[in-house]
Image 1: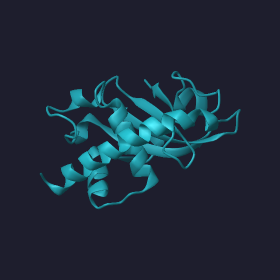
Image 2 (image 1 turned 30 degrees about the vertical axis):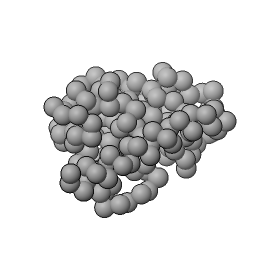
Image 3 (image 1 turned 90 degrees about the horizontal axis):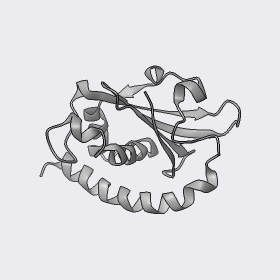
Image 4 (image 1 turned 180 degrees about the vertical axis):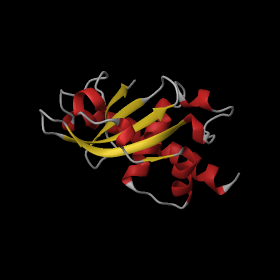
Length: 151
């Protein structure tokens, strides 16, 4: 198994454990302004297209270089959360297959809710079709607040 796929597989196992514990703690730092219908554009006034992006290959290259930044951890969690419902259909292989560059891109940023003034980290999968999602995290953590369909 090549180094990249091994690193991604190992990270996906760690992510599973993190997701379980973070779901238990997430409610404490997430505001009621976030729902599964929250969107970057309508609720935060931010166009996902304006956020800096990277392809799945770029993300995996950074990950295989053992860059363990919080941003990459959040993208990895997001990738795991939406794999079965969306990303698996963008590839012909099983997880952790690389998603072709033309299928979409990862975007991430820090956002502040305009009325609640609460800050979140957000990872957005900008899909080529109708499968875009935004995942909101408690600021500076891997605690998932909400997974939001965004089209």
